[in-house]
Length: 129
Image (tube, rainbow, N blue to C red; front, side, top):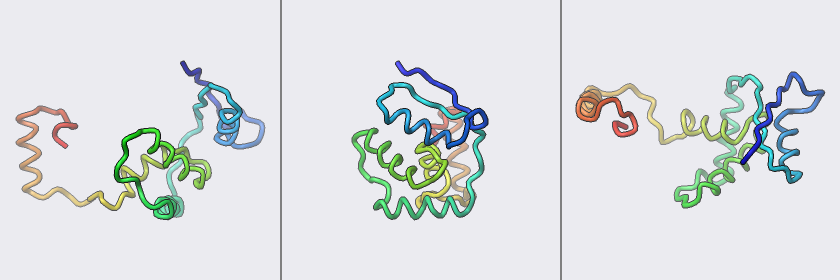
């Protein structure tokens, strides 16, 4: 089992909480750090850098049979993103920056399909999606 230690950037005497947590974990501790710092919005420059880092890494792996490999990919990316965890990088990519995402409004046909599926399945959004 992991022990979770809460680290506040405000309570730290200098240094970066993420670097401190990474250094502590790298020293062989089995403790898992969770930063309680207030998350900040991504700047356009950070978003652009994330896109560039994913492209430089050869893009997102298309076939992943091991979740650890995908986590390792995002950890390598996050090492280039100061102050961003691998989870934050993955979420920003998956929710906003992935070029395969379509952010357009739904067409009337798509609206009808969604309404019909909700009538059949209920509000089970993983099934509806």
